Amino acid sequence: MVEHQDEWHVAIPTAIGGLSFAAALFLSSPYEVMAAFTLGAVGVYTPHASFWQLPPRYLSNAAAAAGIGLINTIGTLAGFLGPYATGWLHDVTGSYRVPMLGVAALMCMSATMVVLIERKSRTALPSVARAPHALKHR
Image (cartoon, rainbow, N blue to C red; front, side):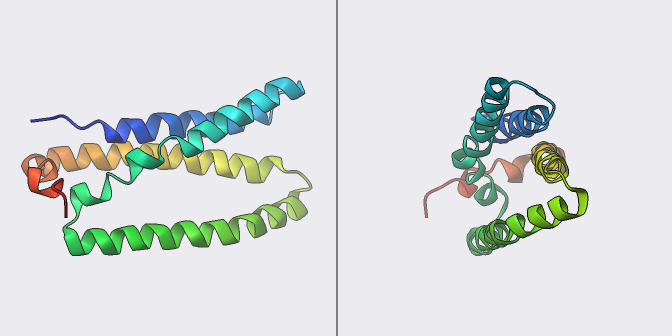
């Protein structure tokens, strides 16, 4: 049986990206800040392909479709509301540190959640979570 490591391909770059965004807020050189934001962007975009392989692994065909739709809806809503939340937090605090620390914290939390969900599924349902039928083409 093939051992999947998609969760690590999602969690590691996401955590590195979150930590890079947090670190960028405390750097003084513009070159260091640019490098940290670049590494943060890599952490945002790198896990996309591996992430989309996770929902069908745990959900049936119909549930996978609904789950993927829910994930897209939440992402779209976050893309719409995120700039408003960032502006509001800037107005309240007078700084962009709090909104960026929020982004960094959410990225690190999501990386942790991916690993915890994967570990729980391995211990709870080891044969079902890795069932070949869950990965077959539809």
